[in-house]
Image (tube, rainbow, N blue to C red; front, side, top):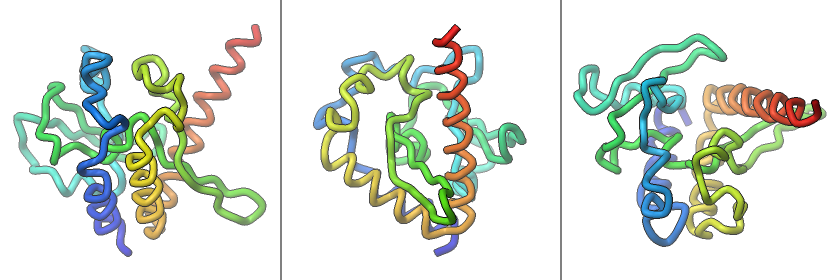
Length: 173
């Protein structure tokens, strides 16, 4: 499957499920949708930028090169739910993939970067809606069917592991 088809399919899988069986944004005041002067936003999966209009009042898309080439999307904190990027649909989960001993180990896990803002993280994956978790696993499998998305997820996993290692090193001073 090509990367854009995989992204479209993964977005469909995650379109109508949420981390809880109710609007979890009511618990935290929709912190994951709040933007700041720092330009908070989400990384887009390969080809996902093509699903957004070139000019939009709702979204702003930028190219970034670090930590790896991707597109980054920001919004004003309110968007049509059907237009949410994949990263928002997965939140507070994230797909992961790592190469170990010549094999790809993959799945989903809580996104380490979400801990400061998401009150659901302390409950772990078991505290999330089973249908949401199952849909996230299915969407991850679909994404991994594309070589470009597989490489992207491996790079994203490495980035998040770096954050985690940095955080753990900071706790050992």
